[in-house]
Length: 138
Figure 1 (cartoon, one colour):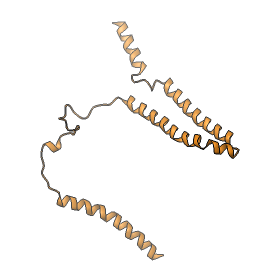
Figure 2: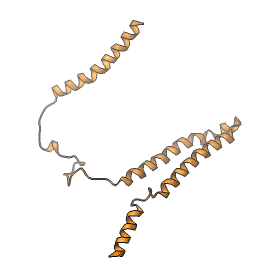
Figure 3: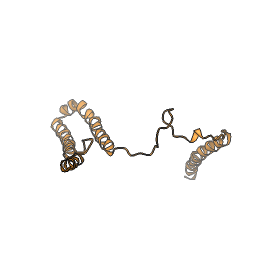
Figure 4: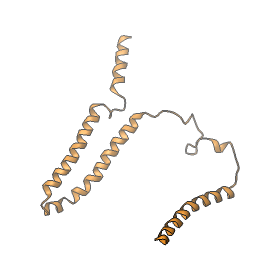
């Protein structure tokens, strides 16, 4: 029992020691030549045009997450569709179909919710409506 614990502790020690040893060896052996060019922001080899800190439109993230959800849906639906013949042969075809239908229905309800709240639009309608009201007052 104690020998098994010693093996585990030995491998934990090696697992901790090797990365730190490699980092120390890299720090010790690599050249240290500071230059002002090294502190610049890297933009695919181009000279930086403006600051790197600027706001992205949060719509991008929402649309990307929605895409990811439906991409995962396809990844989960495909194996059931491929194995559907086997479910039918086992007499569970109705259950597999119902299970898949409930899964897709939940995703369709989620899509309807997102669509209703305008999260699929790149620019929210509220801003456009407010701008139209302001231009109507002028």
